[in-house]
Image (cartoon, rainbow, N blue to C red):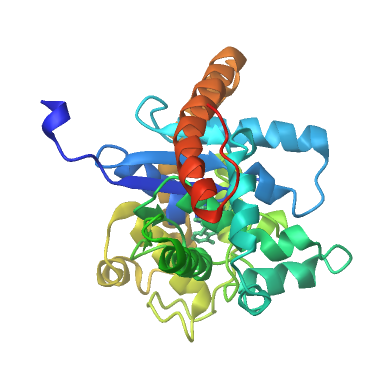
Length: 337
Ligand code: TYM
């Protein structure tokens, strides 16, 4: 029966194992991974090669990689249905990254907003890896003949480059790569900082600006109460003029499925304290079960290790096949299996 069905479409997405994964990562990306796991053939990667574009403490990075894998699993991703693995353990990412570098223009990479932001943040270490970060991301995606890429809005520009590179390469060598589409959620594609709600919530910012997936309930309540809003107690969705309250409404809407109108009707005029507590409750009810699973899974090192080994083998075998084709197309000597 299965053999007669058309093959499932492919999904690839990645998350950097740096700092603490945030509620933004969860709403913008991670929770969609789970929603898509039955319908698609999915690879979810902990992108450790991307993480080293910024200087990392090696012991910390190793721990952060395992922590991120445990969070993936705790969010409900089934490691049999999905390929969950560390990017650096499939060396073909770096190999294809290099090849794609040779098809990417300096001007394209100079325009990337994440590069501009990160070079401002790490002015003492604007390295070539940081510059070529989007090409490696394109390699991640194209390596697996990916149809769909679940991401938050901040990664859209990078996805467009991946599409451009696939088309450019195909135009020269014939149909080699699938041209991927983004999957960006309607609500929650850009969760904003709790302290500066005109900036996106980011794991590399100070702790009081974000909610971490592993934050305990009392911390979540505290951070939520301190979130910047206006002082007029109106609960209305107007991101341009009232970014703080609109951000909290988006979080509420993304987690409960309520519309902005329903939220306004329920909370307008009752005071921001009441609304912030309600948002905190919604966040806690989603994150607490994940945290319990996380505690259980992260204590089981042998299990994590087995997911890691299985994931890298399955990822490598797909990546290897793509590279056979790519190497042949560009004229590189063939590799033996
Ligand atoms: P990263 O690690 O910064 O974020 C992981 C995912 O979370 C989304 N995200 C957000 N969504 C909504 N609101 C936010 N505040 C927020 N912050 C982050 C991101 O859009 C992303 O989907 N370059 C990528 C990692 C990557 C990748 C890939 C993604 C490497 N290769 C291939 C997709 C496909 C990044 O830095 O994500």
